[in-house]
Image (tube, rainbow, N blue to C red; front, side, top):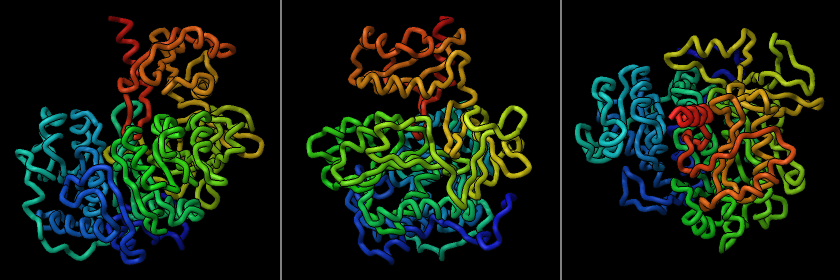
Amino acid sequence: MRQHQPAHPLLADRGFYLGPMFRRAADRHGAVFVTLDRPLDVDPDLGVDLSYPVLADVVEELSGRLWEAGVRPSEQVVVHKTDNVDIMLLTCAVSLIGAVPVLLSPGLAGPVVGQLLERLHQPWLITDRAKLDGPLTDVDVSALVRQTLSVDDAPGAVPLEKYAGAEPPSPVRLHPRDPALITHSSGTTGVPKLAVHCPNTMWNRLVPQQAMGWPTRGETAALHMSFVHSRFYHLLGVLLRFGSPLVLITDPDPATVGPLLTRHRPGIVETHPNTFVLWEELADAPGAPLSRVRSYGSTFDAIHPRTVRRLLGASRRRAPWLIQLYGQSETGPVAFQWFTRRTAARADGRRVGIGIPGFTRVRVTDDSGRRARPGEPGRIEARTRGRILTYLGAREQYQRQLDGDGWWEMGDMGYRSRLGALYLIDREIDQIDSVHSNLEVEDTLMSRLDELREVVIVPGADGEAVPVVCVRGERPLDPARWQEATAGLPPLAEPRQWRFEVLPMTATWKVKRVEITRMLTESARA
């Protein structure tokens, strides 16, 4: 399969390859430290204090095991295991021998994993006992994959340890426009789609992110991100290029993250917007863990202005900033927005910025497909060199979101200002007739009620706007404060208070609004 979208001839052969990243970084920068919050499942004896060269050795050693097991170039290798940093190392090892990593979130339900495996072409599967004995128990894995490899002693699987010590083969470099990575969409509206990336489109996402990362080159970076999302690998590519020490976090609990950040004093922190809400409490934590942060990175979803203000206020650097990237798995970042302490004080959470010059363009169209006037709501569309090749097994669905000129429907509603800034209203599927913007109401409530961990406005069983709220510490919501906070807002149903852990989430902590509506509807019928 080759890339079908047009590319500039000078850029057509450029590619971003995951396999050699750590070795190149080790050769360039030497023994830069990499700290983990838990040992690797593929080699627990290494501990948690590692380095670029150590991880380069692990990637190459794993590539030798995979080659000895029989994995060959262009074959699909699914990585679906318990969440840990070795998901990333296995991905790099698969890529190093020219095979195609297929990254499935550890949080996916077993039946969903089974459906995604069916869309693939008899892939290899790398997993563990926890998955095979847990979510995958009722999935006929053996009928769907070529062979199952395990990072531990899972029954019915071939342990990768069997091939320990195998000689790593020479690295294999795929054509820049051939499939090289498969990730999945968020699945907020149903079964996730499998997004096919190639080295060339990945390179076109990497370059602008390198430019954004230039001011913080070499700063220690603390990351808590989904290891199955393409954004993680692009950010990793940027940080390795500049020689940044890394703190890779699997468990986002502030009680463990706080001391870890206090010890390493990162200058760069990136995580999911909902994790940043959780980490607001680190702003006043003992040891001031965020005091040295110069740059925060937020992607996957819009971030609440309250959270931006608290994060920037926690830094003691002279001029810290937060950069928000707007995009999706299919496109990569298509717009960006910078916040400083001054701009955050009057930030509009719906403003997601402007297109990336030279790489992306963004427009808003009306129902007839014409460009909407400034301020007029419509469908957000993007044109980018970083767009995926296709949806595996769903080519028609891919084509439906793409017009003949290469404009991609983002599935969001928004508008543009007279100066060209893009404002996000809602996902098209989430709109409620009585509410102009669910997201705007949520931002307002989060700003007025400091005790909220999350608030989500969804259509209820009768189409009314239902607020689902999560309160810090699971304290009861104060009815008087809620009534005061909702003054002047569109009519809302009585709030439903849920524990945060009950909210259905994607791998990047995006709330599955459609699933919440389904849960509310079923509850109303019970």
